[in-house]
Image (cartoon, rainbow, N blue to C red):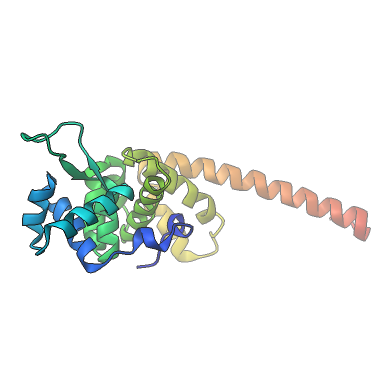
Length: 214
């Protein structure tokens, strides 16, 4: 799976895991929440101190967090973040599960995925933005907002590739979604304005530097 652009500048250490770290991340994502003992027992790992050390490490990465509410003995209760689930599926190349997780958090992504042949690249893009935001210290739980931003950014480039038949078909499918159609209209308007500016500058250059009126 290609690394999404949003993750290009992230430290490799953040998105790479040892097999035991991956096991703990999988475990806490599966059990939803639990104290260190519960995570240890569910993980099947032999040594409790190893689980404790790994939990602290992935907590520093903001992939798990401790709830304000304590357990019955006052112990910390850990839960995985949305970024953890997304990063886990990306590392394991589980693109369909990635789509499912994002769809469960975004009705806009549900609409998008039902109107494209391959929603997986869009899921990778959205997930990359959420993971990058988490890495930068701002947890993105508004997946609708991230989905809108990713689509909006992509449309600006896509409408400039209308000489490609596949791109035209892709845009036609996307335009069937009301909220995407609105963004697409704005993207086309912006592209027209930008190209009109380029044409004016070219004509000016031709007249002033080449002595030719075009």
